[in-house]
Image (cartoon, rainbow, N blue to C red; front, top):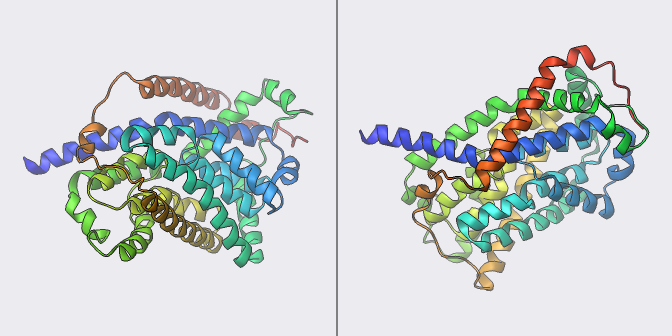
Length: 375
């Protein structure tokens, strides 16, 4: 009976985590579909084609406004790179769209306190800065070219440049073909990623239900000397994320479980930052960019996460801003109510249903040659 209770708890936790993130997933994939449909390669090269401070800043701002989950962010970052954005702005978008978005901050505030919201947002800016410095110091020109060639081949195999015609952005948005192209891109991204998403939710539910708090505390060296714990937690947090969850917003409940279990402030932040290198996403990077470029990207992301987590842990402890723990967080994750998440999920389901219906009426293989490259 104890085992069956744990299984039921795992199912409820997985469902609760999926419920928290559903609407943001839909939003992110819709935005990715829109960008693919209306932004030409020439325009993207002009806006984000260099690794300068201006381009990195623009990409960071775009990411913060995109409100994407990590899978949707990966798809959209790939789209930016494919359209001509340089590597650093593409990765800056990836970090900001999973760490600086409003809904992530709100969920952190509700489940874990304002201090984690502040740590996530300040850490998101720091992640971009550290990443940019690492890429500038190690820039692998040959790997970047390999990645660009690979993403063009993959995208060409999928559906080519599915961009609607029109002189201006407003004209493209008003084009009656635009919803169809958005729906086709939306369906394509989902078809590539839904299995990885489902696996991630299931794994996170099982870990949250079956792994006791004491095990998490020991794994993160709870009770060790502060310098040892700060560094080790920053190193371990992203690695735990690799094997646990899939989404920048959906991994907040798992982070709350870790915090309630005694993991340090920096360790929890490192885990939150680590949503971009979970196993399914590493496989997505391999599919998008090829094995060696994906390995470089993963290494840069991990190093940035470790450095940012250490600095944020030191800063928040020095300022005495580390919040009080909530040992009853699992109970909160399995409670469903008619709150804003419910209504946003209903709206997202309606939008997704409409886009899937459009895609079924207008399959991509019948229309991919009908849309010329915009200008």
